Length: 180
Image 1 (tube, one colour):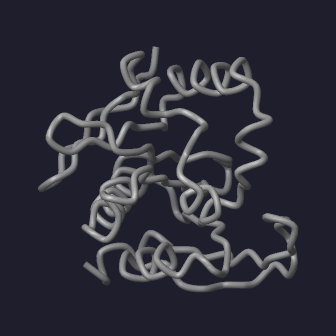
Image 2: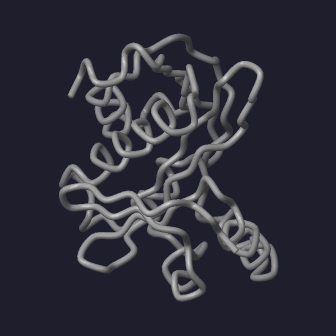
């Protein structure tokens, strides 16, 4: 069972994933969402239903993975992963699935809530994100939340038959809240 705490924002509630979220957390996403996260339509088509189910099953028990909800509707997921306890750091990822929910500030509100939890409750010192360099909307969101550009990993992602750069961004605990 997922033990992620419920975290309430102004418009967003982060809560543990539930079995009822399975239909929303599925692999057949719109092509633009897939491109922004570095997957291709072909990747999504060849992903077996059993693989998608296994990922969801693992997500149900992950204590640092939340369903992003607004008005009691799951619109995405957010999670901390690659946790290194000795270094007090983790990597962050978020996905707002439907294009109709993009550009409304849900990603920024979610990111701030997760950062607040990571720094204040978990006692982490550093959070980073890996984002495709062409995902300008996500980069603007991360910068709005206090992340800074740290480095580029050249041609590190093969998406739709082309190489693309990944941008690594990070935020330190003492920087959190300065951008809010």
